[in-house]
Image (cartoon, rainbow, N blue to C red; front, side, top):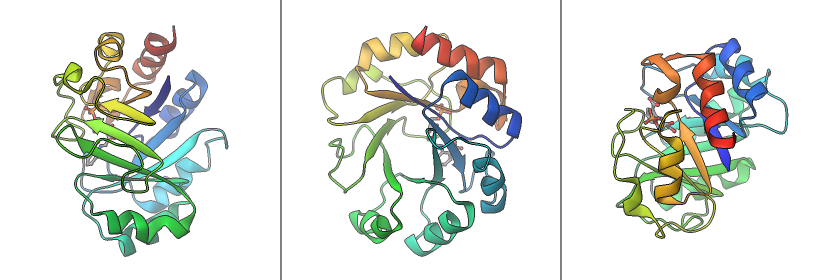
Length: 195
Ligand SMILES: O=C(O)c1ccccc1NCC(=O)[C@H](O)[C@H](O)COP(=O)(O)O
């Protein structure tokens, strides 16, 4: 089970996620209580070993702005959240980074339909920590897709059983307040998934 921990902003939490076995780490570079600048993302990404994917998270920015943030931060993946058009993914293809499309359950759920490498199926409100009807997507997405939205150490196993994803993505569920990550919760989440 692939695990992405999203919305990190402090070195200690990056270290906790890496040591606990996360496969990917997200840095939010769009409007959010978790927002970091590309320069801060670069400092954090430098702490991450090559086998862990660093992902810049964007929502609504045009490809020119995304490209500039990716080049300044050095992240190796780009997550476009919400209903970005296919052309936004095409415009970023030459960067050579992994492309992640994050959408709610009403969208096209075939991973690769927008030339993306990974798909995230999320709650309608990204980063809200609100659980939703995970079972409703069971059997619908195809390819390498992660379930997100309201996951936490206590419910992630139930969510995996309900939806049958290839991976999981979490933000609020490993926080003590919006934007405040907790190393023990990060470890507990990985332990719950893998344990
Ligand atoms: O986390 C945010 O604040 C955010 C803001 C704008 C666009 C995307 C955002 N997060 C993207 C993620 O991948 C989150 O991990 C995902 O939405 C799940 O969040 P949560 O329900 O808090 O676990």
